[in-house]
Length: 212
Image (cartoon, rainbow, N blue to C red):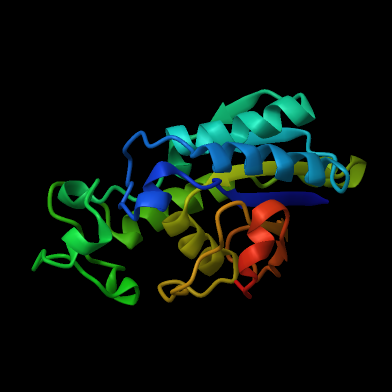
């Protein structure tokens, strides 16, 4: 079996200050660092993670490092897991961006919307996420020999598109995304297969329970 565990990075300074982090190097808050380690310790009691892959962005890498220490696994990074590039809107607060006439405020209308300043549309993000998932498919012989458990650390917008790809609904995708530190478990087969997503709530992610 090929199990993938997707976790949204723990609370960052951008989350706390209500800023559009995009690709900027915002670190985790002190609370976020503590929560990442708490979640890692709780997860170790449940799942034998044998591989960790992270977005290269600071807040994701700091989250992954907590799991690396607990599971004693090296962190690999993959650019395809990075957050959406918001171009000129990167680093703006939620209030500031409301004053931008060209900013698409409706998350459900962003499939083809390209943010000013060489940003990425959701369609562009989905293409690289699909490419990453295709690289996660394992050979039949490997499936038969053992279970593989991979932890993948990424970001909010990527999660929107991950859900749509895994449930095979693109170009339609959900408005909601998981809490900081929330984990999604998937028995992964291939892109194009309709997967079932299981939410795992550990650490502070339990405080904001919802159905992804």
